[in-house]
Each structure stands twice: as structure tokens, then as C-alpha cells.
Length: 273
Image (cartoon, rainbow, N blue to C red; front, top):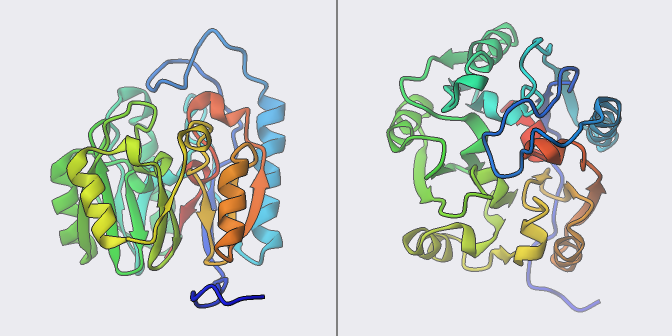
């Protein structure tokens, strides 16, 4: 096989926090994916979630389960519960009152897991808008997380924070428009960002995987990578083929029921670093 010029991909064991969709429903509409008139099959959502959890453990990763709170149908989207770097977390403060109770619940659980949690001063929705790429954090704004939260994250976590502005409401969180593949590698859909942010991404990641709108529109970029295996929505078939060509191992899963709430693989997964 001819050399690609890229170093071989290597998996690194990870520790994730997840929350079962015991109370999952589309009871309100706070993103373009939600339609409260569409029925939700909670049993199917639970089964799909369990497949994702077993996928992680089958790949050698550790999964902790955060207790689900009644009346919090979006708590399954654990990535929004904070961002953790080197054992320290910036907690979550949600833009919409419907999700406000999730912030303290995730903060309490993280403290119980030995993580030092900073109570946020500004609206910031965890790994929904703060994505760790090596020693850098890419930070989304435009729909949920406030720009002031970017400065707060840099101060609290002690990392470089690079702001990116989202402009397409379908991609209301950064983790719906950009996937972290490795410490120096990302994939994204260009149309989700304003011109300045696209220029920033092109400068920082000139070899990034550019994903077509058809795969982004099924939340294909809402993916989780361990450096080798990329767990992603099964419907993102072209993205999976592109990942394979780059030396990654795509691991497709079906989270179509949870997509009704506007989330997929990454939304369900908070990494504990």
C-alpha cells in the first residue's frame, strides 16, 4: 500500500460521562431539529443509547453514567454539562430556561467524580461549544455560548481558546459543525461558520477534512474520536468513507431517535480529561 505521508493513527483510552435518556422527549422547541408534534419512542432512544455506550466500552473506553433527572428531557446530551481539562471543569450555564437545572446537576456529579468545577459566570454550554483539540480549545458562539464565556474558559482552564462564530441555525452548537479527530486534526462543514472563522480554521488546520452538507445535515460531525476510531452517525456515509481514506476507523451507530432532540453521538458524550 502506498504511503499517505501521515503518521499512523493511534487510539487512546478515554473516560466518558453519559446520561441515559430515561426522560427523553421533545417537550419544547429550542433548536431547528425539534418538533414537539413528532412522537418520540423512548424505548428506542434507550436502546440506541445503550448501543453507543457498549460501543465505547467495546473499544476499551470507560463510561460513567450520570443519573437522569425527571423533567429534564435533554439531559441525555451530557456533552453540554461542562468542559473538563486536566481534572478541572468549567461548568455549564444554559441559554434556555428549559435546561437550566442541568448545569447544577452535572456540576454536582463532576465534583463527586473528583473534578474541580468552576461555577460559570456567563452562558456557556459545555462541550457543545468548547472542543478540546490538543492543547487548544475551539470555542463556538453565535447561538448559545456567550463570547464572554470564551475568556472565562481561557482563565479557568488555563488553555488557549480560539473563538469561532456559527451562522447556520442547524449547527447551533460547535459540536454539530466540527469534529475533533486527533490532537492536530479536525473535520468541519465550512458553511456553518462566518468568513473570519473559516479563515481561522483554514490557517490552523490546512489539512482538515471538509465535510459536505449532506453528511453535516444528518449531524455526521457530531462524532467522537479516540485518535483512531471515529464513532459517528450511521447516516453520514460519505464522511465515513473519507475518514477511512485518512487512516481512521469509522464506527457507525444509529441514534436517529435522539436526533429528534437535535443531538447525536458527541452530544451524548462528555469526556473526562
